[in-house]
Image (tube, rainbow, N blue to C red; front, side, top):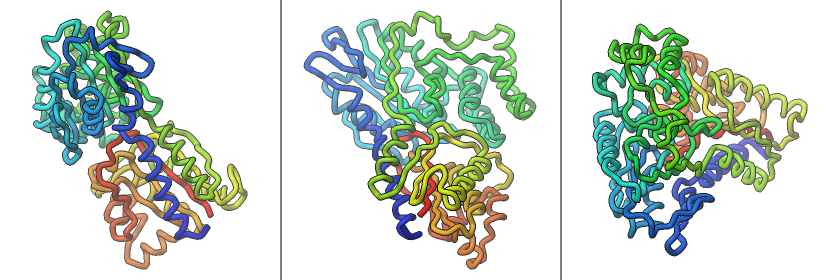
Length: 442
């Protein structure tokens, strides 16, 4: 398989991975109506015992999830609202789609979160709340506690993104300055029954971390939040109101988020409907169909983007030189979500940075392609999902007057790949299950 064929194959494999985790299809697989009964995964609810159904949700895939719920239950839905990222709207009949900012929360997100809380307040024990959750939901539903301004929450988010904190750490902070995160949406909806359908964008699918777990008991504490600030040495940088809130919490002056022993969770059912491993398995099937020998490395890879890129480049060289861990033509597949520590002021995202770092390490390696892209179609604050590179990328760049090392040092991968025509552009994909990385060796 030659280089051009490998590049085309990489894109086909990525597209197959994304199709396999379509959010609407995931909801339809797990939510089925059978006469007067509603099947939710392995659970069965008698709709005859339900007075009304209210739908709320948040995340980049919330709109297609809402449309799928309407296909199943449109005649029973009393009202609904979901908050999604700008540009990710889909037509719905009953459920209102509210757009807001991501990754930095904005006032539209505050208004959308207020609407969610208004929808679930005042419900009774015979009411059912369907909660639709996907990645991005945490930033899209800012509801700062009294005394903390949205601008102060925005400043905290920016500091956490810049210092290299991972998503679990970011969400631990978010939970402890919010009115909905960390199980607090479930608390607001009681005594109604709550069923949450969750599309996972977190390594290992931890329910409490996805969108900051609005319907899940919170195992983290105020003390954990302060430890994260100290770990990255940013306690002094965050707004004083945030610091004061967290410190008051550690002294017991502010109530903790709901914990696992809270009886409210007896009427809450959380169900994962899609995850990264499903995307990787689809990638493996497509790679095999294209004549490649596929190997899934892991769906749980985390760490500094450049270091993970170096590891993947080393595997590419190993496949080419020794035939290990698989013989060419081969496709190594991995998933998860890496983090970038910002050193420059350029434009890019973790996937573009991954591919640029890997391109430097595979420079000159024949018939080798590396692709990395986000399944949600968005990589960082850009319109690209990621990028693709091969052993000739750095040579082509230098011939055009581009300096790959300088672009990497400045976190400026987007214009680098844009000029090469090697950005992966998908638009909104109607899903969000982290990233897919591919190493192809012909």
